[in-house]
Length: 209
Image (cartoon, helix red, strand yellow):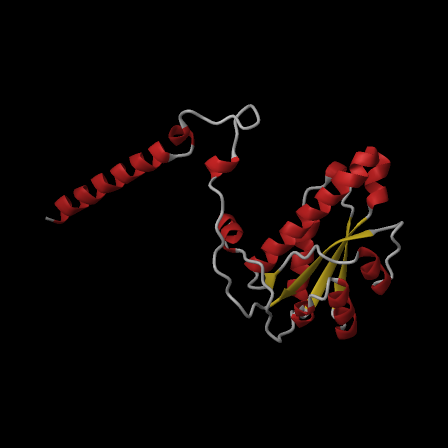
């Protein structure tokens, strides 16, 4: 799957088929996560793969009773070694970089799962201390960042509306808009491409005659 197609067609999946995920496929998803960028290449992410039904039920309860999580054949709990980043970058590293690094890894996982024909969802609503207790995580060593349910999708969510690039982009200063937005955001380029396309079509018709 082409990269931009993967990004644009990915959806959050919350309904899954009762079908196991082959280990080699799961391995590729984790491998994709490990290729995410991280501050100082510290790679402070750690992944707990959960397949046990009892543990999945407890995790669903700890995730504010989101019991749909249990239907996923696999839950991946992403954890951060905050201390590893703090030692290099201080408090900002602990509070920001450590989280950003794991977020990049999670996005890679979501895209890899989609590219491999699976569905996934980024879940951040949960009781951190309960999750740590369920999975024997020592919070002074690692902190849960997200729960990622993965499985073969049993739904096809519609495309969600997205803000246009020109709505969310500023130039040089905060809230500084462009006076000539069409030139920058491709309008003129699109007009030119359409004109060229029409000319080529006319030329083809003349050749056929």
